[in-house]
Image (cartoon, rainbow, N blue to C red):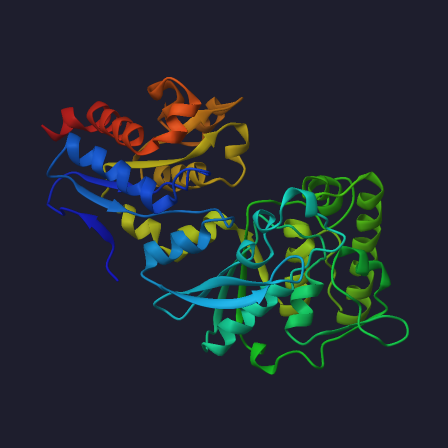
Length: 389
């Protein structure tokens, strides 16, 4: 599928590469609103839309939209063991795009039922199986937005791995089962996995366990109390020891191993996966560098820009690449949080806030597209129109 191009003419070239605005618009819709603003400012501009993501929710949408893929519906096991409908993406080169949140995500569990002691990644493994059924040889797995803390043992079991207790029976599902593992047997894993490439898109660098690990940092957000956090952390420590003994893989201090409740470490251990910063992986997959050649301006954005945006978020990933090519960068945000100015030190030239343009966060969230278009119009006029003339 060709790039999404609005009225392509010789002359000014603007690349639009935003993330989703969480809770309001997906990345493709944000990109189209920005494109409309650019075209209003410079009608004959070449505008290339490249929806982006960082490995979390929206990764499948962004890659399918930007790379010309297709969606395939699947029925998988949800976080609490129920059957749910999900989907995977298949890009034009045959790469499967799997967003673990579609099967094992936080948003799939109602607040009163959130409990990482019992939630499972089994459905994520079933989505990988679906990709194998479609003869995919390469997999991109976005692992943001999880409801789980099971180190990926559920996904492994769905793929045929035997994870056994001392008596030889299989462990159950959920984070509480980690401490019960006595042996891991890969001999029964789906043989179709051999020779396949697995790339994990993650926006966090937390290790598997410890004070900065999956249990202590993320499990409370997923419903774990203080005692459960300790139990989960002990289970993750135990898991890493069994993995090292039985599989010969040390995941104990691996950056990103704690992502998605340890799914990062689990996929490395079970599948030989490689963990990469999500935004970098998306940049490579959609060939953003190629699309940026000869561009005059890049417009990016996300729902909130703050000091955390410097650590693996889309606007900064896009800006760093653009600056290597000496291209001006504007970012549009729903709102600006503490430390938002830090993104300017890494390549963002100007920042526009929908909250300020609309007058309130509520108004910006209720009807964001016109304000996004307005910000893009102003940014384009400010940075480019004088040169265009």
